[in-house]
Image (cartoon, rainbow, N blue to C red; front, top):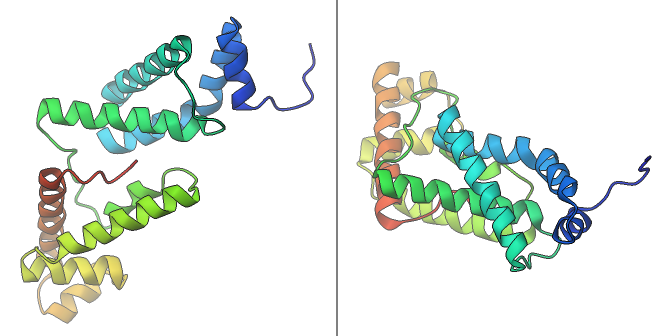
Length: 195
């Protein structure tokens, strides 16, 4: 059968609820790359990401079958929220946060840009940025200085090292500790950095 129009997520959900299991396969296929990439970005472990991805869609299926799904037109953000909550549950149970890569390219705020933003999403992200900026104030002065230069003034570590009169390794170390300390504060205050 030829289909010459793209079937909406909403229509696929309706078809699945009415017993067409191939429509669920289509939904998973349509969104699996985005959902899996998001989970992997946070947990940084392929096998763990696969487990959480499967658990996410088990929860999606159970919710759809129970008839309690009501996120009209917002299927992907809803699935992402389920994945996010499962990630948070995993880290709470294992009492550990994701390891922070010590690289010049790593950006704490990149995790906020994983999928398209609605106005509501933008408001949530703006609030998270404000919360993180408040936490930055609690960092030791040297760490705060490097973090502000790097993330808010977009300076290279070479320039930061020159301006603060330290070696590049010292600047990198301060940045690494700033990120680790921020993560600890975020965890203690239970601020969720991604939806």
